[in-house]
Image (cartoon, rainbow, N blue to C red; front, side):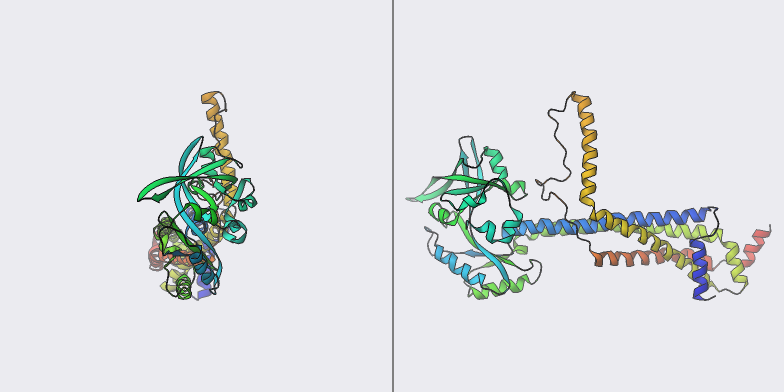
Length: 442
């Protein structure tokens, strides 16, 4: 029996002629459905997890540590020397591979108004940073006011969270309380700033802390003891050649200052995301593995139904290997049909995941409103449920289809289909035609 004949017999088992549905035919449909349903969530997890990790990581990198940051050390603890910051800035911006860089002075203090006070992270930057630096322009949006007014003296931009907490709006005055040293005593220092705009980065925890002021104003109220100065550098790709770029920056600085990569500063958080992704994919893989077991039980049913045909083929001289090959090809066909149905559906769902979440969100809110109305008689205090909220990292899920990983799992699924087919295929090959005909004649 040739390979072509084995393939023909396998196709007859996989796509039998006739309208009558046997147990074996139904089991084939069930096995294909199980493979397809197991691959759909796997593809979605691969696409969504990669997109979410990249989206969250991008925000963490660009909003906090940048790609590579250089800490500036001053000769005096009393005064922030702008010339030292400018020297490092000029050196770094001319390094080949650095796409943009900016100066930053970071400090903590208290934000105070007549309506209350709260902790604040003071970030002193150049007033044109939201136009000059692409990451700031991309990740920050103006909620109220005008960012262009930031160039005025004693101006401040505040995060949406801190604006809501202190009930501030553009035009109001916010007082920043920092510390100063006087006769070896640490005393509070209060400086008023005019709120020019309320901005949002999409992170509630950051928006509830950040107050942006100009570097010129920061130098007047901060010292090296109560603040840290940096030059933040961005490269073409934060995930490639970062060690090499770090060495180039250190070389440009004559190894005078220390530099830190984002993956060093956010190592635990990034590893957390990666390990969560691996765990999710492992769970999805187990589902595919369990689904492939159905191929084995399906082929057992087929071999029982096709005993007479196997006996006839063997009586005409077909060897064991050819019969076994037919069943292995049938198993591969079941896996292939499952892949053909599951992978496109998984990609389609992944590409439309945000729209599907909005539909589910509307349905959930509809039922929630109904139950709330029955329980309370009105909807005055009802809060709309958001399945995705900008307060929790991302307002929408970025989707990236990892075709290489999907191809790998297609190969793995086919290999599992072959492995699941081996035992029933070998048993079918060992069927004895004489015993089959004897049982059929009774």
